[in-house]
Length: 400
Ligand code: FAD
Image 1 (tube, rainbow, N blue to C red):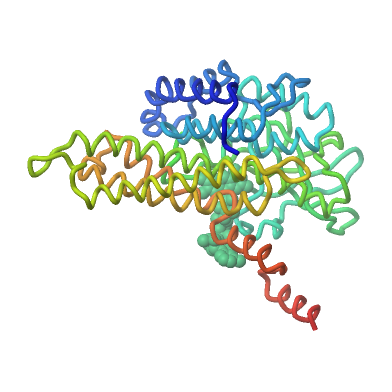
Image 2 (image 1 turned 90 degrees about the vertical axis):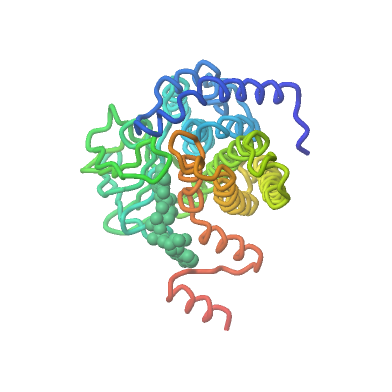
């Protein structure tokens, strides 16, 4: 049911106003200068868009994932960067800590986020991308906590985020115990070193960097522990990550929605052969296909944001489908919008080429379209689909 409550309509309207005003005005400059939009973050804080999902007792608004995607959709129409900040400040890491964290962890993280921090999530490593469980960052059990060593890369917000949710292999007495989450803070945790920045195609206003852990000590009280043993803990943390996926899908969708809106204006005002471009049927059908794709992707994303797992996160199977569809559709729609502008679409003075570059990311980050299809197929078939060679052999043996 996508009927909005009065409060949701107002939230959406406030997000639209901020987006069509100051956020639109800054978007091109943020891209050009590749600098984090601290001034926009301040406006997000003032509007209550940072930490919306944080429970009221920790100073947030206690809003739902669906409320967040309504805001993200509006913001992304004009600026993918700002929309990603809203996602990170309400979903992924924030969701995990608010669900599984201790009261002290929640209080600390809420404090940072409500003041404008966009937490970073650190999973990917140079040799462990899609195969995240193959990560080699270790957390060795010592007196009172853990010592972490390793390197992550492609970390969104490296050097601007304070809160870091780090995933590492727990090692006790030389034996691997499974992957757990650890909180580290840029201004407080010794041994957390921000590395080199990646030169990205799009989404240039948020740094993507290497992050190194050099004998980084994390005290026991900063371990984020979903219920159950360590081996199950990673599944719990990844459950929280489904929120992030829906959020990322909505950023892609919103960028494409913004591209369609400017394209509609363009075809009505631009004339060739003595008539507006909008009168050419070939272009009308392009526009219709763009609209159909966006209606479908919005429906999938809204549904995924509303259908929650027992733990209270967007349900995994729907989140995966919504992200794959929205991300691939956004690539098509932004490219078609650029096409409708002709040469001017290719001009950096207009937002089309930025929208194409920004939209391109979402089939990669946060679980690639291929890996998410693996997941959808696995659930559909009711089969484990191990991706390692020996994993398949074990499955075949098991089936015999
Ligand atoms: P690879 O795993 O090397 O995959 C390469 C290609 O092979 C892909 O097309 C993939 O789909 C395909 N492939 C691999 N294995 C299979 C298989 N079994 N079946 C079918 N196809 C397969 N990570 C973080 O931890 N934190 C972040 O904040 C973060 N932010 C990011 C921001 C951006 C802009 C980008 C681009 C990435 C970010 N990432 C982040 C990393 C991202 O999650 C990884 O890029 C992603 O998981 C894929 O890993 P990879 O790049 O190593 O690709």
